Length: 378
Image 1: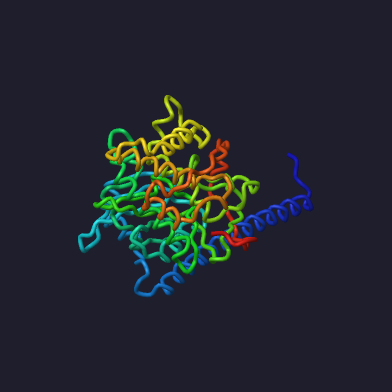
Image 2: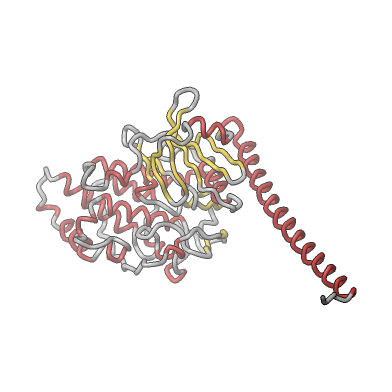
């Protein structure tokens, strides 16, 4: 039987001990780093509570979240972030509880949403009532919207009349105007789409889901990003390439324009075609049709109010999706156009449609930073 020399045994023992020591150090360092991140975001939560005083959203224990949702009994919807459940507060008020998917991340997107929406107070912005933040278990408690989201009413099975859709478009525009100019800190949403527009019992629209939003000072509206964010079909071209300009609040205007075109019936112009990008979503024939009808307004019967409203929304939508951000109107002008007469709306230039076909990986939420814009933008 071969016996290792004493020096070999000592060498193996020391080597093993060193390896174990390195592993333990790595584990402790990683644990300390994660604890530090959690401590930082707990401090951020406390900072939000202090800043808003009695107006701050209430912080709930996760056990309270489970109780108000009856252990997540009734699901209202599901997305990439997690699921939304119907809940009831002790006073009997209905709420919507957004439970984020458990993750090892530090909770930046969660804190971002709490920080963003806690700064708002507007009839067209969803009201955040409370939240729960306990390590990887995170939830947001919102006011309950009985009509759910706008996308449910843009399908053939459950359509809304054009007059009501136009009023919803005006409400969303007022909400965006508030985010862009009415807050002390400008908020850029970056994910305006029908799924993120909630409707109350009177169909009053409320902008929701601020997980991708960015906060910046009024004179710091250009946001430089390391990657794209948002939803295919609604993303402004500058989000993908600085060749089109800088990402800013005008990127929300673009997304809003795409949504208004959809609300006005743009899908009806695409026959037997999968709607996956702005290139296929709004083909040339929509623009040509709208311009042709608008130029012949004198021939439209006075009682054809629906056609007038539809074309007004199309014109506004095309102004909002101009390729260059500087050519897009501010939301105050959008409201003026929607509430005014169609005769007062100038014919918009034909937008240069661009290819928005990208992978899901490119659409993922990426870190970004705010840089001072080179020139003042409306």
